[in-house]
Length: 309
Ligand code: ADP
Ligand code: MG
Image 1: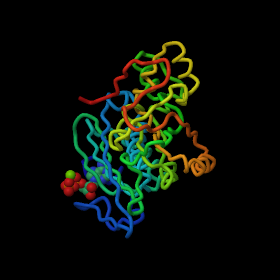
Image 2 (image 1 turned 90 degrees about the horizontal axis):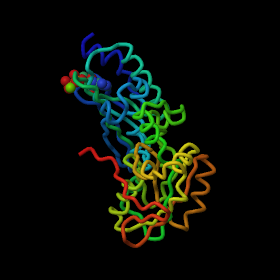
Image 3 (image 1 turned 90 degrees about the vertical axis):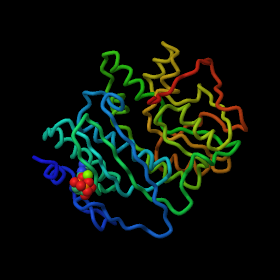
Image 4 (image 1 turned 60 degrees about the vertical axis):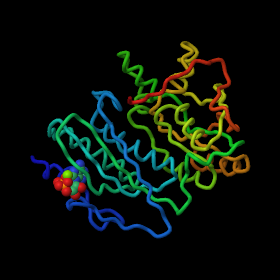
């Protein structure tokens, strides 16, 4: 099987909505809607850095698309199209079967079309570029948090970092934690629901504190968060009681949950979102005038978030 047969067999799924030309030519051609803005982002996953080396092809494909969908979610965008740059050490058909099936399944779940890509030989790496759409001027940004806003996060914090730590130590995490690490749920619907309600939003990929700090810096504000309010899963509560290691929660990363700020007058609307989506949304702090990010609670160690360099 050569490169072109590989593309045809595993990554040419047909055209999808709003696509005039898909996989096969030099570029894809996509219709754009009036009064909307295209929102785009790219993320690369590298074996051993973004997923444990023995992760299944199915989980790798899922995560590669999910983390990109998470960026669209953070802007409140509707997913539309994506491209896939795939570097493979070899052509392994069972691996490709699994990878392609999983990618296709998630793409159908979120109605996002694969419209092109690139295929090369080398150490395993997966780069996905997503494109989405928002109504003109409506996207959720990092830069518009206001003093007095309440800070919220979706679901629980630290589970994927805890799972990763377990694997590193040679333990097998339970399915809940493995799924939190390998199959993060991109909060796409939540992001769209937050349009007009949240002032600022980010998806948590590198750790709660570092990512919240991005909002603070871009918005020129500070914040206080209360450790006791941070939503935790059962095993995490026990883990922290035993180790007092809050850094896994505050800086572990890979959560792919949304962190967003809401003005007090929109709290009623947020309550409606909560009821409609059934997603756990927890207030963890408040936006302050300045002074960076401060914590309330019995833990004052500085945590180091993941940085590539
Ligand atoms: P070019 O020579 O113009 O770079 P390629 O030979 O790399 O084009 O790719 C041929 C076609 O297949 C293009 O339309 C490209 O977008 C698509 N393609 C290549 N690799 C992938 C992939 N992994 N997934 C989806 N489409 C791909
Ligand atoms: Mg090419």
